[in-house]
Amino acid sequence: MTHTMAACTKEFVHAAPLLPWPREEGLTIGHDRAGEPHAPPPHGDGPSMDETHREQMARAAAALLPRSNSIADAITDELLATEEASYGSAGDAVRADLRASIRAHIRYGILMLSDHTEVRGGAVDLWRETGQRRAQQGVPVAVVLHAYTLGTRLLWDALVESGQTLGVAPEVLLSTGQTLWSDLDTQCQIVRERYRREELVLHGQDAARVEEVLSSLLQGRGSDPEFAAEARRVLRLDADSELLCLVWLPRQPLTSASLASERLLNAGHASHWWMHGEHAVGIASGSADNWSRLRAVMARSVRGRVGTATCREGLTGVVAVYHHALTAATNLPPSSDGVADIVEQLPEAIVAGSPELASLLVEETIAPLLHLAGATRQALLETLGAAVRHGGSASGAAEDLVCHRNTVLYRMKRIEGLTGYSFEAPRDRLMLTLAWLAIRGGEALEPERSTP
Image (cartoon, rainbow, N blue to C red; front, side):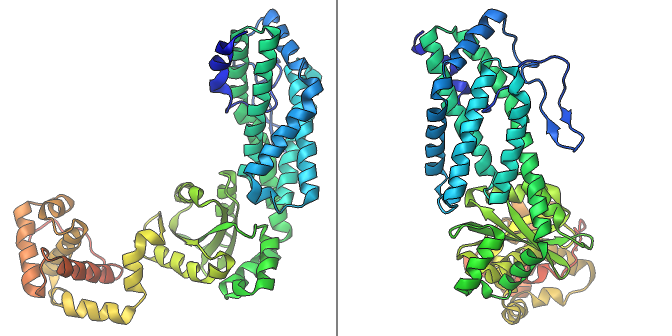
């Protein structure tokens, strides 16, 4: 067997699940009586493999049994190194449990590759137990699933090496790789589902304490080192966890924010939510690289306005970023469904943060427009908004307003004449933009299609 085999199978290395399924007939994807997904016959939809090829693959896998623990330990060591943030402070007991669990996974995986179909039930139980235990230990679900991918890669490397030594045909490895790829979603679904169920149980058991901690954070107690340590324990946060604060202003009154928590958890994002008056507040932990995906989950999962803000100072900064996230949410149109981060709303936030100065700004710039009446006032304010959105471009504003460019130019000249500010001067345009932002939240401006 040559280097060609390894090259041919390389494309499957990062995708295959740790424990492959033996081929069985007559089973379909579904859920058991407890409502959890059970595994289908994973090879049923993949490419077929005749008995000679199956024997070759089983022989290559069986040759790995004496090395089972050493393969597992290599996976554990690499996982501990790459997921230092999750396992570094987890304690010796958790790390020992991780090593024992990976050894069991690898042994099951090798046996199943060796065509020992009788271990199938034990493998499912192991997946479910792993999801439950990692949730109890506070290991993020993304880290749990990463362990399966990492384990797959190293086990697959060992399998390719064994196959080369024993002369397994390249097409056999390719067929096995395709089968493993098709099984990955099912395996991850089982682990994720049990993890999610356990998370909900844990949250329900300690819901009152979690809400008490989160409410105290909004009172500024995150700067107290003793309280912060307790908060991290209750919320299962690492000392250096990156945090995102979310404020959800729902369309309809809420009694609980469980929908947001469940949807985010299903997508692999750990979060804690509580009701603060009529809106919901959430704290999510993880990596800032995932915040855009988290916001996308919120955008498609809930109705209403959602504001977010990154907490750059840990628990100490929660009270400040809560107000930032609330500002980002309230600056969205009141009847809209959407998600906005405070960074995207900085000009609006600056104006909203100083109502007295915002009022003075409006008075000194666009007050003459506000004193007009009827359709003229409506059309000029509408044109002002379109013009500042397009940097003073009449053509861009005309596209927004669906009217002739000359009409927009005429209106812009009227605005300049009434206010004394020019769209062509950068500072004047900035003043007009800030004034527009200051009145936008209070103006009910429907698009005006007629000219004044």
